[in-house]
Image (cartoon, rainbow, N blue to C red):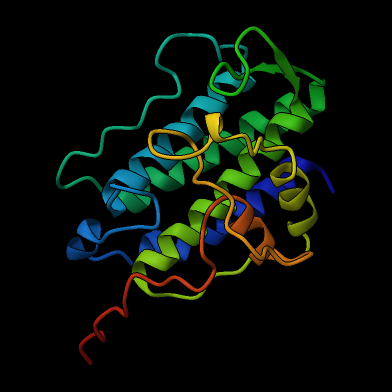
Length: 205
C-alpha cells in the first residue's frame, strides 16, 4: 500500500469530526495552546494546502503553509473535504513520480523525499485529529495500519527545549510515555492522552 493511500486514510478519520461540528463547537478550546476549534481547523487546512503545493514543487513560495482563512459562514466540511482530496491527489502524483518536497517550515533549504514528507503530514493529521476529538469530547485513536509511521516520525521530532514550549510547534515531552502505542505518540508530543475538553451536550432527539 502506498504512503499516499495510508495518508488518505488518516484524513478520513477527521471527516466525521468535521461533519459533526455545530456553530458553538468552533469556540471550544483545544489541546493546542490558545487555539479554539476554528483556529485549529484553519491550521489543519492551511497545512494540507501547503503540502499539496509542496508536492507540486511550490513549497518555497511565501505563505503557502499559512493558516487557511475561515470566515463566518464557511462550509467547513466542504472546505476540509476539498482540501483533503486535493492533497491526496498531490501526494499520489509526487510519490509515483519520486519527487522531493521543499518544506521550509521543517528545514529551510532542504528537500525531502516524497515518502518522508507524506509521513510528516500523516503524523500531523492523526495528532490534530486527536486534538479535534478531545475538544469535542469524542474518542479518537490511531488505527494499527497508521501507527508505525506515526511512531517513526514522532521519534524524529527534536526534544531539545529550543524546539519545545510556547510559540513552538510542540509542547515539552510528558513523562512516563509508554513503550509503544498512540499514547506514546501523544505524550512524546506533549499531549496528555487522558485529556478531554469536556463532554458535548447531547443532541436533541
